[in-house]
Each structure stands twice: as C-alpha cells, then as structure tokens.
Image (cartoon, rainbow, N blue to C red; front, side, top):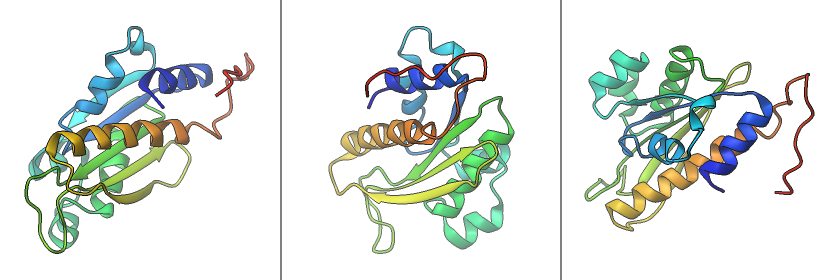
Length: 170
C-alpha cells in the first residue's frame, strides 16, 4: 500500500485526509505530499512532537498525558480527534511513539500508538510494537502502517453520489 493508493482511493470518494504526528515528525505528511497532485486530497499535517504542542494544537488533555503518558492509545485517540476537529479532513491518522533509542520496561523502544478518526465514526486506536529495528526503520515502519490504516479507513466510505466507485483492481 502506498501514498498513491491512498490518494487515488480518497479522491475517488471525494474525501480529504490529514495527519497528526509525533514520533514521525511529519514523515507521513511528507510521504503523501511527495505525490504530485496530492493537494486535492491532503488537507494538512500537525507535527506535535512535544506534549505542549499536543495540547495547544490538538487539544490533548493534560490529565490524559499525566495519567496515560504521551505514548498511549488514549493520547493517540485525542490527537486524531483534535486533528479532525481542527481541519477540513474527513479522515485522520495520528501517531505517537518511541522511535528509539531508549524506552522503558513499560513502554519499550519501537512502541507506536495509532489513532484513526473519520467523520461520523468512532475513533479507534491501536498499539504496534515494531521491535528494536533502529530509529530510522521504526519511523519508516510507522509511516507505512499509518498509510495502510488510512487506506483501510476508506474501505467502507461510499463514493460521491455523482460518480461510481472506480474499480482499480486492488
């Protein structure tokens, strides 16, 4: 799955996407905007590396950060919800994690929490432990997984009423 696939499928459904990123520092938005013509689908990206940025830009609650920590499904959900509320997007992916090196017994290196928010749907979150692949590989794996989540989030989205869903064979 690729950014091109995401853009083609979102475009066919008339939907816009946005990102809310911490550990990837904008790499997901970069992968999407590397594709020429992405501006008709990609609305914006929020890079919220610090807790203060998560709170100020996305409305993540301070009590969630204190209780669950920045690397948590709760914070990933709040990031996704906040980006959806603060954009013109229909679908948002959020990521927050520990790319490495480092980590702890409770939150190991390469743990990434993802959020997926779509207008009119319940926001979902999940945690993926990629394993200690090294910082660059963890970040790239996170980008790849986020793109797959966005594509999956489009699966049951109906096409606009004025045109049928394109069958791209994949």
